[in-house]
Amino acid sequence: MKLSEMNKAELESFKNEASAKYEDYKAQGLKLDMSRGKPGSDQLDITMDMLDIVNSKSDLRCEDGTDVRNYGTLTGIIEAKKLFAEVLEVSPDEIIVGGNSSLALMYDAVARGITHGVYGSEKPWGKYDKIKFLCPAPGYDRHFGICECFGIEMITIPMLPTGPDMDMVEKLVSEDETVKGIWCVPMYSNPDGITYSDETVKRFANLSPKAKDFRIFWDNAYCVHHLTDDPDTLLNIFDEAKKVGKEDMIFEFASTSKISFPGAGVAVMAASKNNIAQITKILGMQCISYDKINQLRHVRYFKNLDGIKAKMKQHKDIIAPKFDIVLNTLEKELGELGVLDWHTPKGGYFISVYTLNGCAKKVVNYCKEAGVVLTGAGATYPYKNDPEDRNIRIAPTYPSREELQKAIDIFCTAVKLASAEKLLAE
Image 1 (cartoon, rainbow, N blue to C red):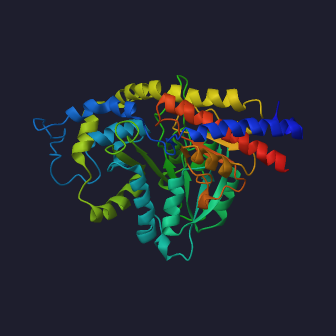
Image 2 (image 1 turned 90 degrees about the vertical axis):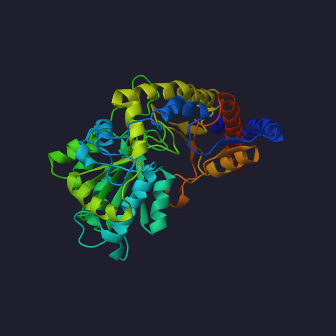
């Protein structure tokens, strides 16, 4: 029976049962963490043999003779450019290979916009009294954090099953020249796990912004992170943009952070040749080169896209059962109660759930008091403001299966308790 269909006596009984179970969990003194989308130790073990690829006896010269131990090769070694060009389906000369963090590349891209503008800017973004970014939500909290760091005003764009509300995006970018960017996680979005439809990608590629220096920040973090044998597919935005001569609008980002090692991966940015030239000129004042030894290590280890896919299958074999634990438990414990909605993703690192209105913060707090740390309620919205207080991001990958089962059991109990309390108060 749905909780909304229960009478007061039935709800009181339901609440008391959930409360007793919750108090039992609290008494166990658990410490479980589902707050961030981190790989588990068993995933990190997958690529440990990468550390043996480059050693003191290795030939550390690239195919063009570059000695990766030395200065130079600012935008990355040619082998790494070719590898990531294959992954992102662009050409090698549209690639900048960076350090270990795609987030750092995104931060730097915004910072350059503030201090110097981007290709096509009439003046640096920082010279405007105010600039704005569109923020599909729920979305990635660190994207929103970058905007807050630079004082960029954020405008929330609702997420639909096909991606961001493109009617709203098209209207805002066409009317306001202070709208300089939009954050996107186009494949297995963080946190909903939505892959943008072909129509959505085409509409992005055909945007007509009032600001001539508007940029789409296309954070393609999960482009090879599949959980099923029939994964989603994402239309190539560069191909669509090139058809109409709008490829300068796009900055694309990815990394191997959840493929090899989060602390020692390789990040990449893809952009048009015009953008690459403008970025490289400024980047040359920031550094001489990124870690080319690490770039070479990754290339020699993975070799090509097929090599990456083979390792990603091993990741899938480890984390897909964890997603199943969460989804099966949600269905078993809450599926018939009408108090929680969720999307079943085919890839990525998160499961996004929606409580009854006004219950997300209470659920997260109940979990915390019982020893389960979740991402803060509201974190997936600009300014941490979920207007309906409904969304919670669950990250299943880091705990062991045993810990995960315990954590999701506690989560379901917290949802039951918070939902019953809300309905009784109405």
